[in-house]
Length: 218
Ligand SMILES: C[S@@+](CC[C@H](N)C(=O)[O-])C[C@H]1O[C@@H](n2cnc3c(N)ncnc32)[C@H](O)[C@@H]1O
Image (cartoon, rainbow, N blue to C red; front, top):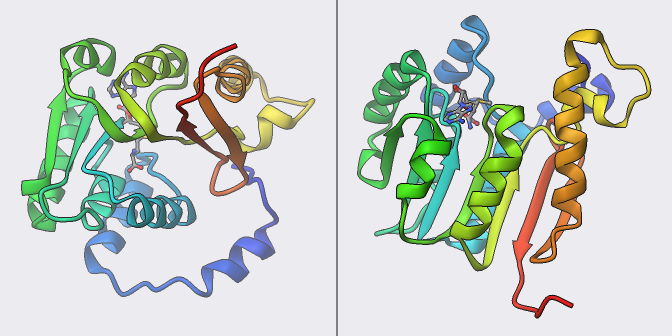
């Protein structure tokens, strides 16, 4: 799989990485062995920093997978703060619940089982921080609903917006054509949304960072 920065730069940055966290190491190995996509380590480190800066009381994640980033976020939440996370794959849910228990962060994490498209309308209270990381064809729908659930001043963080470099490439492998089109269309919406100050950064697989502003729409 191609990456969006040069391998030597990735290697250089990886050298600074602390690898002394047994649970995270185990989860990364599980994800590699069973080919479960999780947030790249540098994007996960970035999201942790944002959580530390923002100190959100309520976080929502769309797409839990094995709860890798869920746990990394939960560890950085202040007391009485919580993360809600939604996952539709029954297999991933079993693994995620096991890791959440192992992490001892279970009190801060609530895992909703099912398709986020069905779960989102049942959520009533707004969130300070939303992390969108689900199937690419669902991004637009989930984003529209997330904007309703995001508080003013809240952050929305979206993964895979450079999509292995393909969103900015003229040559796209046949198997990536449809997903690349979804992401390109999504990026137009994300970068031009009237309620968001948004940017896309070349971290991990390209992350979108949007802040819901207070200004009147013209
Ligand atoms: C890229 S992985 C999530 C990785 C996770 N956020 C992390 O960083 O550790 C995407 C996950 O979203 C789930 N998913 C995709 N579309 C979904 C939807 N509409 N509702 C709920 N889960 C969804 C998939 O089953 C998969 O486990």
